Length: 120
Image (cartoon, rainbow, N blue to C red; front, side, top):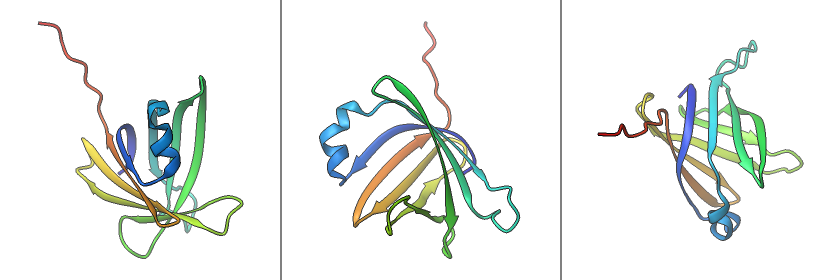
């Protein structure tokens, strides 16, 4: 799942996303394995997104779960965690990720390449 991915679509039970889906802007993530010893199974995710006219870079480290393709993110300032599952991917074109927090699920579809139509 490593590489640069572009957010293509979101489906969510999250009240915030339901109310503000018209404000969701382009998002890019870069995923890579951690290079730290004893953490090579963890996933580093750098998210680049524009929100309210400001570009944000968010860096997160997801810890590998015991089950392959599942990761856990400890949410800062909370005893809760965010579970992330790489549900399906072909590693080149698309990836479907499930996120769960507080019994609410968000599904995100990412694509690795953005193609622009060529004029006739």
